[in-house]
Image 1 (cartoon, helix red, strand yellow):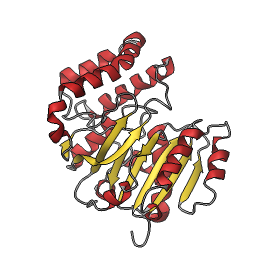
Image 2 (cartoon, one colour):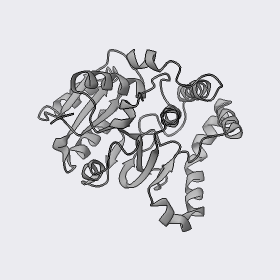
Image 3 (cartoon, rainbow, N blue to C red):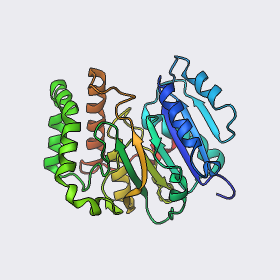
Image 4 (cartoon, rainbow, N blue to C red):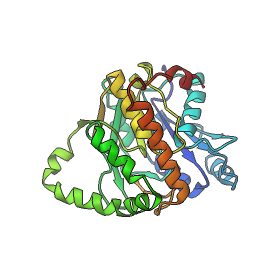
Length: 294
């Protein structure tokens, strides 16, 4: 990509204009913002969100607001935006897909990212500091889940009550786990290869897309991490947890702290899709070409 933006940031809004405007303000404070292009997808909010975002961003030449005629979900909205952008501009060195409830902790985030080699890894997973726990949500999964762990995932989403309790207890469990491993802080601050990044903020390298990687929009919401992880595994691309890159995440701002029944059904469907596609024999990336062209 000659002379174009070195980094592309894509976020998706659905009836959360305040969140999106906070993210926009945070992005504008970054050093090197001029070398970045920002695309905001409004997923048919229908509540005036698009108008508010457009008005706030009217003076920014490197921001694009795309209004989807339907709610495509998180990765669905991101894929739609990337299809539009890549067709017109090609692939930049780095593509960030993130929730709109993210804030950048340091103005040098972009400078640090652009100093990385986009051909040396597939995906970067920054430190995503949870507003619920105060700790890094990455790495989400260190090693590829085996049969026992996938059965555990199924059990935790087996009923609404079990899933509700799991989500309510999750921050307490994470805090306890981090306290248990606090003596390993030097190791946790090192750049390490992992299986899956936290889906709220994923940094794709140019190499990922050039090798045939794509945004899998087969599920509406949740479980995106499995698709990202399995794609890199099959393409032989590393996913690196890079704590020098750091953002803050206002957890559950867009979906709610307590699990709704709709949220539960979406989680269950997302897990079913991911396990069925990526963890059953003979599946995997069989429909890559059809999804990447849709």
